[in-house]
Image (tube, rainbow, N blue to C red; front, side, top):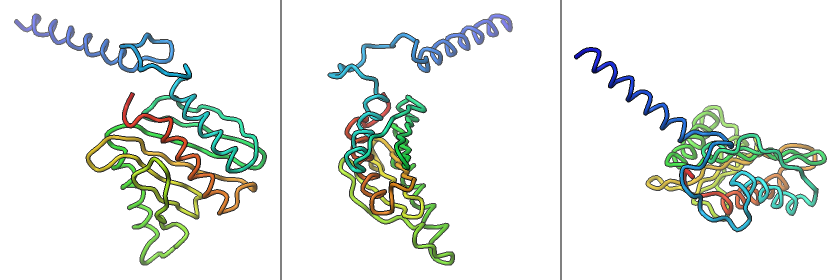
Length: 191
């Protein structure tokens, strides 16, 4: 009976491994099911990063290139670069989007609030179209936002703006525009 249960355990392990490989296949892996129709034919990362690049271009008035660092919906990242400016966009889709947002903002408030009191590190509530909640962290030129709620999945988005071409007010405007474009192109949960 021992060898039979070992064989069953090995068989289950093989099946679990196959399921894991099928679920985590790379870009060359065949799709598990037919994807939702896309009008543009572009991948999620191309849509998100392309929309972010266009929004940053409009807000800055400068041409930017886009480089996709990570294309996965759960850890999408792209870097937009132009003359004396860089915009890093990160988006995580899933059930923990609101928790990620809440953890980041609470951490900033606890670390830099009363006692230490670095006002430029304390999150300031802002508006980002497509989000449920959003903040600006001036010292980091960082927009942090989510379109999730404590009970629904969504996307957690951060937009960091740096460089001489983006002083504080410009960085905020760019961050808001890029975050809005990211929400417009990103699904509200894992794809």
